[in-house]
Length: 200
Figure 1 (spheres, rainbow, N blue to C red):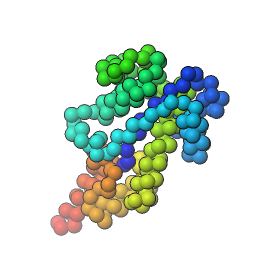
Figure 2: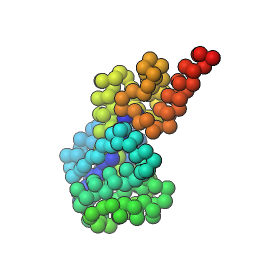
Figure 3: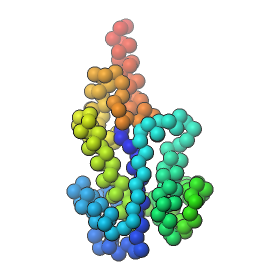
């Protein structure tokens, strides 16, 4: 549950990021991420795009999640207008991803599109940290409104327990949940099946 957050960071060189030990966001503790995010934002140009759950659900099969991400990447690059851009390819085919991204961008930087770019290039690692910290902020805001929702990821037992309890009590998914999310759909379907079986 929660939004999809995409970020871009632009610098003349990444020496400071290397000096700070910037790595993929998943490899830093939360407090390290927050400290690094402030440093990164203070020493770079940066932008964030937030794609709300409702916008993801509105695809209705006509647009893939990858396409939404590609459009977000394009809008970030169009705003920042770098000469060269390193992008973490979200498509299984790196070449296909690069072609799709180029098609929707207005600017024409030199593009390096690779899987695991957030592990291989400090500037992409920096963007992943900015995005992760912003998403965590959004999840805390949602938690303040709804209760302890956890991280919002399907692998988080706290998030799964929150969803199960909400569905059991309210009979529907909570706000800020992607209805197209397989985990949410499965839980809602299981709940409805259980209620039907109660009447058999």
